[in-house]
Image (cartoon, rainbow, N blue to C red; front, top):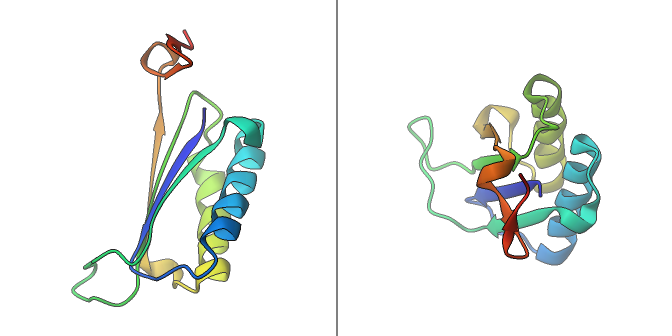
Length: 111
């Protein structure tokens, strides 16, 4: 049930590999099976941040529990910086803990 939406102005050359790595790291950080992690990638996006069109990235991370933003933000920032070479001061991350009654899978909610 964890979901990570990644929007970046950078073009990702090997999208499948990047998506798989993103799923693996989010699964580890949330202690959830990668089987249930969803990754959405929007690369080559038109983005303007901090008065510039320099490359930037926005991550939207959602899960039913298992979020620890203060711990996860550094790990995810380092991952993005290493994998797609975006400076840490050009990355925003939003974390959202979603109620189980507001998240559905296979036709039914988790709570």
